Image 1 (cartoon, helix red, strand yellow):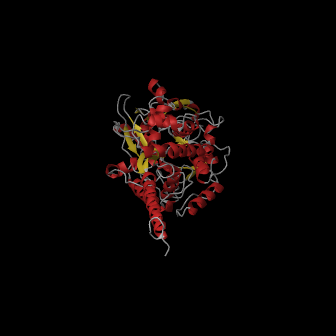
Image 2: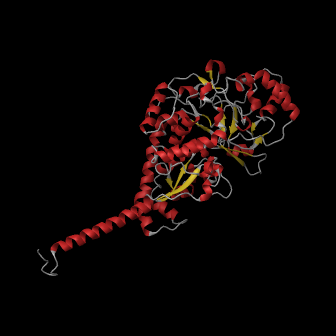
Length: 491
């Protein structure tokens, strides 16, 4: 056995010593890398203390691929306030933000190596209302997020990433004002986390190209272009010329949809059942295949069970009982044949309903086939999207209809009372996104200085915004229309 002439030890001794040191060093580096970038910590117990809190703030796994590092999310409004639609930081986007909470409803915070922020379904599906301007909002989970300016949020993140000031020097200087990072974290944020975040946000620009088109009007508060989002994010289809923004839907009492009775989900009946809708919507939030498929489906199944039996909110203001009783007779004579019958939940042909067709044109059989294939390739089984080109809209159930303003599938009619007027007499322009409730007309206040301050202007003359169609009940006497509105508040 050969020995080292200086130490007298066997030569292979140094080899094994060096190898041991390298293995120890590798293990330490692997642990540090895992701890700083990959370790997953459970959310605080309060997040899942009740089903409502879990829906509002519980993670669905989007932080892995779609999450934004918390400290970047925190400082963006400080660095780029001019890119928001108004003053007040993220509140300018119309998010539902409860007093005392660190983040708005539908924004989750979870540590995966470092704290990250992501969205859940609650961001778009939480409604709010007030009886007067100086009252704190009441938030209703699973309601339509009629104040949220989702398009402005998408644009904000991309516009920030495109700005030359979105760099490590500027961001690290701002982050240092609100938290203290240790030397290893400073290196990681400067050379890895910030550059990677910028890269991923810029990659979204191509997928969101259609929301920058000057020939498409802004969605405005409370709307999204859901089927185009599916096309461009899930199946990565090339941009086309379709445009079909619609109102955010309510998600309560999903068990009312019975596929065995011919009911379909989504505004045009694009989906077979509620579970498929939840899966597809959640995949849209993730923006990528789920990292943990079983955990993802566990979140979906929980949400399906929770929303399936969640009742619609009761009308919180006074109702004239006699007037509502008279309105029920009007409803039974003129509305129940569609909205409280075997037809409810089934499609009504466009030729019969006569409303704006932009939403229908944004989706077709080929897109449905492609989307179903992509989801199957992720290893997820569901009934999925209807593989047909559709030409009609689903007749709506009216539970909680008082809180679902504005009306029609594209939100083009501000109040229930306006919906009972002939299309030519409905408001041509109005402000949407203000949450003070109009108790007389059944909807939200759409004019005045406060509505001007926060609302977005809706012009029914623009593409996708038409307010024609659904002229049922428009020839009734005014007294019957007023009584009908009071009855609808009871549903």
